Every structure is written in C-alpha cells, then in structure tokens.
Length: 128
Image 1 (spheres, rainbow, N blue to C red):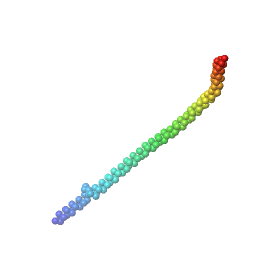
Image 2 (image 1 turned 120 degrees about the vertical axis):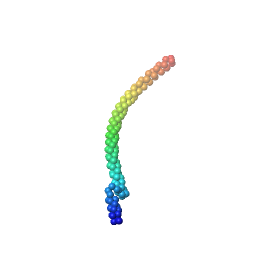
Image 3 (image 1 turned 90 degrees about the vertical axis):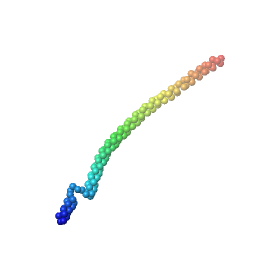
Image 4 (image 1 turned 30 degrees about the vertical axis):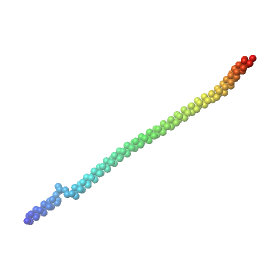
C-alpha cells in the first residue's frame, strides 16, 4: 500500500512538473503573447504605410506648389501681353480716330461746297 501511495504521489508530481503538458493558464499567456506580437507587427506596418503615404503626399503637395508658381508666372506674362496689346490697339485706334476726324473735317465742307455749287448751277440754269 505504501508503494502504491508512493507511485501515485510520484505520478502526480511528474504530471505537475511535466514540461510537455500545458495547462490552460499557459495557453492563455501564449495566446496573449502572440496577439501582442501580431499587434506590434500591425502597428509597425501602419507606421511604415503612414511614412510612405506622408512622403507621397509631400511630393504631391510640392508638385502642386510648383505648378501654382508656374501658373502665377504664366498669368503675369499673359497680363503683360494683354496690356501691351491693349496699348497697341489704343494707339492704332487713336491714330485712326484722329485721321477720321481730320478727314471728316476736311471732306464735309468740300462735299457741301460741291453739292451747293451743283444745286446753284441747276437753279440758275432752269431759272432763266
């Protein structure tokens, strides 16, 4: 009986310290550890993705700023050309306007004189 009790005692101690058997507490800790490691990996992946996305956004923002500067320069050039063209058109119109006024001032009395001479000639011819 003593040997049986000793055998049961030894078996329970062997099972108690057996490294190949996991109890529920150890399995739970292993699961928690694995979950923590997975979460760490996900966080590092997210950080890498954020860094990549941030650098891409920075590049896009820089490109847009360069395009905006180019457009502002183009607008300035277009305004300069517009004002040059406007000045040229004003100059041409001013010359044309001045010539037209001069021509009208000189031609109208000339035409009036010719017309009145013709009318007077007709009147004098038929009045005799």
